[in-house]
Image 1: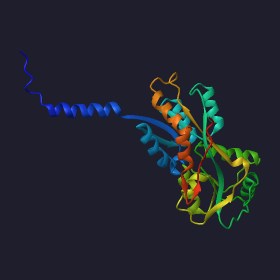
Image 2 (image 1 turned 45 degrees about the vertical axis):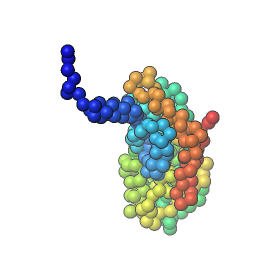
Image 3 (image 1 turned 90 degrees about the horizontal axis):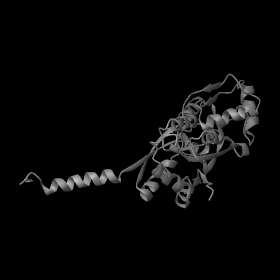
Image 4 (image 1 turned 120 degrees about the horizontal axis):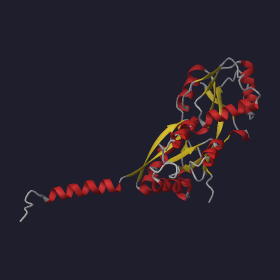
Length: 270
């Protein structure tokens, strides 16, 4: 008769605990923008999602263009970015079934409080024209992000594409580092309002241009297609999309404030 004298009940308990943890542990990768991370938004909402779902979210924060490329390769389960034209192409190319609006904020032109180029006002196109004419120092992210795409769009509207003045410098960096460079050098920079409000090293910088309807900055969320990439965690990713566009997620976004000022405004469509 076979003997099992080596077996100890405690081992089974430990083994069951390990198996149970492994079975319950769930996680997804979200490719997103530096603005959602550096503004502090994800630090606010993701613990609420984890509490509701039990799913861990690993955010890879990149410029929107890089985030989209990451999702195209199948290295993310969900895409959460802010370049609607590029997002719609991502869907049209079959990498997601649907783009869902999730929230918006706006872009602002930041610069020295004294505003030597006299850009202050509500017209972003006129402001950039003045910067180019004055050869004023301007820090571009230059990283194919949603902010960079918007900036290039505004230069084109100003008729200044390729003629942005000798003070124009591209850092190839995220929003936080771009603001740091502007703060240390007294330069102008286009920023999303959320990252600006969470930015601590402001030095002599201030918001100079805001309120132009062209500065509207919408964000979309997309589940990466399992038809393109079978390894995508469709069920868990869909739970995140449903939560962030549902009542709880939208309320979490609206509740994130700094100094009493709301950073992002939910706009998911029922």
